[in-house]
Image (tube, rainbow, N blue to C red; front, top):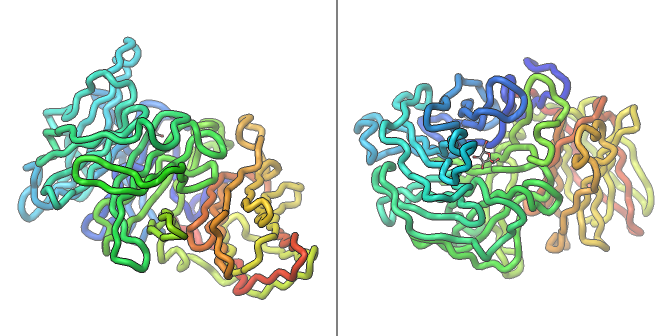
Length: 485
Ligand code: FRU
């Protein structure tokens, strides 16, 4: 393994060094998945933003590339998206060689310092060598700001019915939609959200896409909106809306607020444009603005979630957005422990395993009351509890290791309501890296992602039957996960 620093993720993407936040410009082109990201190359705290860059051909292994976009006289380079301009609508490419286009926010620090409200504008850049080098458009910004303080994070997609590009942008407490024929001239067509969804903080990093409902021909539109603060377990988090898009604006069917992930550490997540087979692949930033700057790593800061496939599932009469690790990540598993777990009421089993700093735990069960405790020799523990009476899944990192670097990190037990968990057996899949845990219940119906910083690796797993009945875990496996570097 190439990276050996304390807390360095072994199978999640992290920058080689320095500060990272949001994933940007997720696009697939000519066999390559691009991952751009908010990057500050001079420190391990947020600063003047660039777009860092990495590539992958399998969404498991990543290769670091040089910085793609540098700040310029118009400002820092904030979050945004990337497209393949197949029909050369922009004129940046040529017939045989379509350009990659990047659409991002310019954040003009001087404008902000001068007390102006119009310091965020949208700019574009293009690449003719599949993302290696980028040229900024001379006519930037392509979308000026008419006085909205938070006006950013353009997500552009191709919308074939109108033979146009559609941009979704956030403006403080709502989303705005624009269309363009050429990526350069944009026209406002609609708005959504002033009186819908969660509004505990500013809206950020939107994404809009269509998904097929599992097992049907029905298609619905999904709008992702990150919000900071105002997430259910504190700080920043990502909500979603399911509804329709008519080429001009989005309308939502739903009444309650929905969250893609109930853990504290999945923020600013967006999806790939142009992924093969129409797949919708999501990557989130595995941190939280409440304490992102304070986490106890030294050379770099933060990592991404594993890439997850999104789908829609109809449960009762509501649609749910499902997110689950992409196919292929299971190829990283190395032979581990396999067994059947059977525990009498109140009984407990303890399994030793040396590699919980890079492991997958998976099983199927119909049990609704159990506790999983990952422990080390320092009496530090990460506790996952399913409680059928409360109808809640708990993620408790209050004693998981280093927690006191910031007051909000370890102060509360994280909760996820699980009211629609099926009666029959469901899968539980847990990904543990050196400083993170991702829990997927019923193949992505219920998901929690959180950072943890144990002083030593967890080496023991207690499985506790907290019910009055016999507990069975079938196909129980613990696997070591190979490093991706
Ligand atoms: C979200 C965000 C975006 C912004 C970027 C700046 O985490 O605040 O809204 O573009 O980070 O780095």
